Length: 545
Image (tube, rainbow, N blue to C red; front, side, top):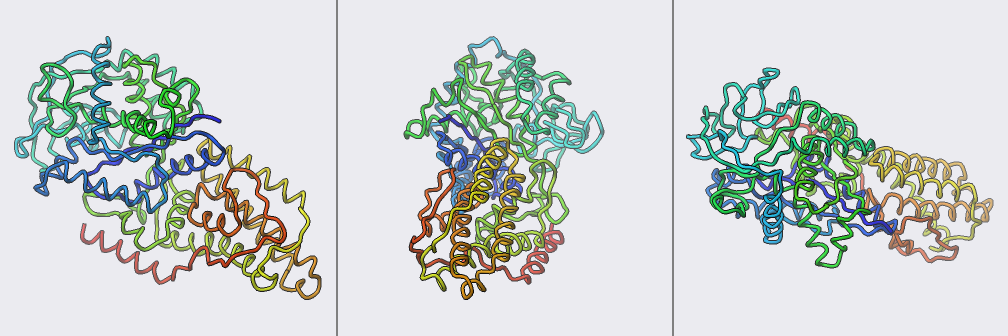
């Protein structure tokens, strides 16, 4: 049994979740469900990122306290994740007392290290909004390539930036020109950790290619020291004399949520905290492309500088970007499909299947309603659901609702045994598309087997052969349910109940004579008219944006 930490990125609690968020976060739940099924001790954590400028600005726009705004979206996120089947051990929030206390204690220790120092620097300030601005809320022209960029990074050329380096800087909220005010802050000397961070990357060639490429680029350019504190009202107060009016910079506390949430999980008996953060554990971090430096440079830098021997990241599962009907998702222009709306109208397993089989795992991907509906009707329902339903319905109608007599097939058993091994390896390496594709190749084999054996004919001409065919089909269904459980938990749970399958990641066996209860359709067909209806809604978003 291994000890596994799975951390998925903490979404900002300043607006609803959209399909781009889910495309990047869903692999974490697949990993958690798989590792539990093979018997590992798993701690799966995440939470809502409640502090910083994004939430404060939303609160100002709505004339509500930041705590109220962030709590509202935190509850919405929690409900959405539950409906989608995310099996978090702890889904917390950065405004929770447990997180705040952990972060303050972590920072107290951090400030004693030789990696933290004071420095006076110009801070972006918007006179119109009457507030200091986080780097990402400063917009301007990139000094490296001239493209539109944020104060922290240029998406066009990938350069890491400082707000004062931008040409024509403006406030991202009111779009008015900004100024800069000098202020003294605590900085972490990330530059002094260059060799340790280079060694971390070199030890992990299994990271996603984008994670390696981005991180190596930052390392080659030379790491820059980063501010730990900010002149912002909404956040965790700095635990240092003379800094009581300042807050901890959001990037220096939200990534510590993996530690604070896992400590909460340990207190609830989910795991042993010291083992989880010890040498022999394995840590996965799952997020979108834009979060790579926070997990490959910032988090490790904080853990190293703190000096308490924290476990560094093992596997980085960083997705590429998702577009919507060929265009970039834009929350500011309301050009997005919101998760809460999607869950109101479509099955969770259908959503999960699409974003695993067609998501931006290793390259950018596009969500289109045509592909989503075809994916559901053609693959989930037409292939998998069809095989399960026609096999079980045949037994109920013609075999006395009892699994018929049959002889275990060695070739089929070997094929199933191999699937558990190869699919498991693909999941552990983060190759979820390949994993689910391999399972569905077996689904297609199962349908071909059913068609070739023609039980609708042999039930009249050779009842022994007919019984054996259905017996093999039941074994296939039981094992498909386990293999697909990390991906499609709701439909697998139905089959577990029907066939009394445990769900453990090992070959399953349903004996002859097993009484089959009443079953139902695994999936329901979606009318093709929905494609045009939903596509028109997306076009309307463009017109109104």
